[in-house]
Amino acid sequence: MVYGAVSRVLFPVAVVALIGAGVWGYQEHNEKNSILIKAENQYQRAFHDLSYTINKLSDELGKSLVINSQRQATPCLTNVWRLAYQAQSDVGQLPLTLMPFNNTEEFLSKAADFSYSVAIRDLNQQPLNDSEYNTLRSLYHQSKKIQQQLQHVQTKVIDKRLRWMDVETALASDDKKTDNTIIDGFRTIDKQVQEFDEVDWGVSIQSLEQKKKERMKGLSGRKIGKQEAAQIARRFLAADRQQANILQGASVEVDENGKSDVYSAYSVRVKTKGSKDAINMDVTKRGGKVVWLLNERNVKQPKLSLAQAEARARNFLQTRGYPNMVPAETDAYQGLAVYTFVTEQNGVRIYPEAVTVKVALDNGEVVGFHAAEYLFNHRQRNIPEAKISPQEARKSINPRLRVNEPRLALIEGKRDGKEVLCYEFQTKFEGNVYMIYINAQNGDEEEIVKMDVENLQETV
Image 1 (tube, one colour):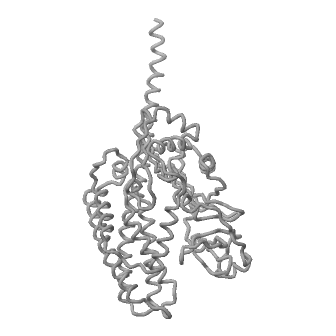
Image 2: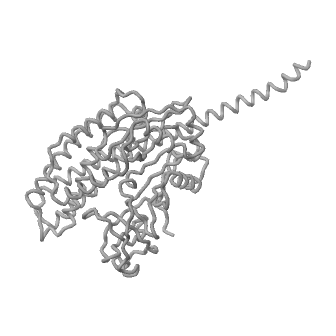
Image 3: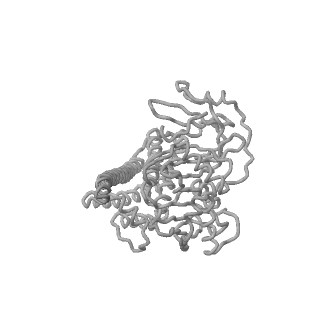
C-alpha cells in the first residue's frame, strides 16, 4: 500500500521531469544549431565577398594599365588600394587562423601600399614611370591567377555544398593530413603566390617593408627552448584562478613553428583533462612572449553583458602585463564579445599598440587573444606637443559635418610608416560613422576610417 502510494506520487513527478529534460534538450539543440547556422552564413558571406573583391581588384588593375589620363589614374589607383585592403579584411573573417596564408596576405598588403604611394602624389607633376607601370602589370597578371583559383574553389563550394564549419573543425584537428577541399584550395593559392615572380615595389615600398621587418624582429630577450615555452604557456593561462583550475592535469604539446616569416615562435597546444577542446598559442622563441591564443571550445547561451565582459577583458590584460589599455572598438557575435584595446599615454591613444581580446559571454572566459601589433610596436615614446589647437584642426574638416570633441591619437602614417600625432574626430554621415585624423602638427588630413557603428566605442 505504501509503495503504491509512493509510486502514484513519484510517477507523475518523474514524467514531468522527463518531459522538462526533453524540452530543455530540444531548446539547447535548436539554439546550438542556430549559432552554427549563423556562423556558417557569416563565413560563406565573407568567402563570396573575398571572391568578388578579388575580381574587382583585378578589373581595377587592368583599368590602370589602359588609362592615359592622369586625372583618371588617381581614383583608379585609389580603388586598387581600397579593394586590396578590403580583401585583407575578408580573409580575416574566414576561419584560417591555424592555416598559413601569409604569402597571399603579404601580396595584398604590398599591393595596397604600392597603389596608395602612387595615388597620393600629383600624377600630373610626377606621372607613372616605366618601372611602376611594369609593377602594375605584374600585379594585374598575379591577381588574375588568384582570381582564377578562388573561382575554382568557389565553384566546388557551391557544387558540393561545402561547409566552412567543417574547415574550422578540420584545422583544429590533430590530424596533420586532414583532407578538405576548401583548405587544399587556399593552400594552393598561397603556394602559387609564393612562387610569383619578384615584383619591383619601388624604393619607398621596399624601405617601408624593411622598417616593418626590422620592427617585427625587434623582440628583445633571450632565446628559450620548448620546455620553457610550455611553462610560459601554463603561467599565461593560469594567471586567472578559473583557468588555473582547468589546467589541472592538462597536457601541453610544443612544436617548432616554421610557418611565419614575421617572427620565430613555438606553437603550443594545451589540452585540458577530459575534454576534446584545446587551447592553441604562439610563444616567441626570443623573449618568450605569447603572440596569440585561441580556445577551441563551443560557447553556450550568453549570460554576461558587454560591460561585464569588458571588465573580464581588462582584468585579463592587467594580470598579464598590459597596463594602461583602453577599449577602442567592440563587437559581439556568436555568443562572443571582441574588444580591441590600445595603450593610452598621457591622454594620447597609441593605436599601433593594439591588442584584441575575445570573451565568451556564457562564463566570461577569454577564448581569444592577439597581441602581435602591441609586441612589435611597444616602446617608450616621447610624444610631441600638438602645434595646432583642436579648433584649428577642425578647420581641416568638411564644414558641413558635425563632429564630436576630438582626442589626441598616435597613428601610423600611410605615406612612410612613421607615427603621426593627430586629432581624432568622430562624425556621422548618412548613417555611417567616420573617424577623421587631422595632423596635430600641420593640420593635414592624414586618414579617414569608416567604422561599423556596432563596433565603435563612443567618444566621451
